[in-house]
Figure 1 (cartoon, helix red, strand yellow):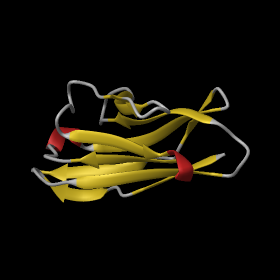
Figure 2 (cartoon, rainbow, N blue to C red):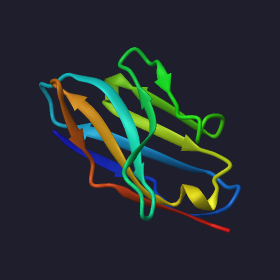
Figure 3 (cartoon, helix red, strand yellow):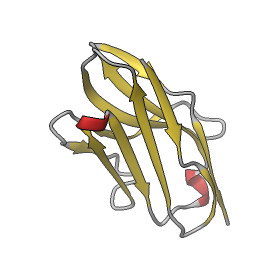
Figure 4 (tube, rainbow, N blue to C red):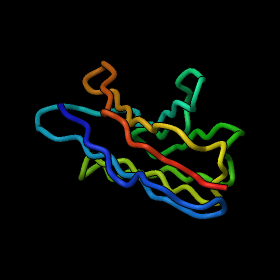
Length: 114
């Protein structure tokens, strides 16, 4: 299974970006899907997670600004990021639990200018 991310880029503070991640291949089962991020000089952290049933889990740091969703038919997870701040700058990674094991995308850069 390959996870392919898209949608990163450069945006001004207060702006919005949408990320998407699709799992390619067939014959697998995906449970939780998530977005993690690695901010400069920090460890990778959870940005948002969504269960197979569609229950979102959003850290306080992005609550009210980030919205995660998924399309199970397309094996795709989305992250809508609004009111972006310079401190949201980093590499965003897609994660999916595929047949019980974690799988990662290569990451996409998000840069928020002040």
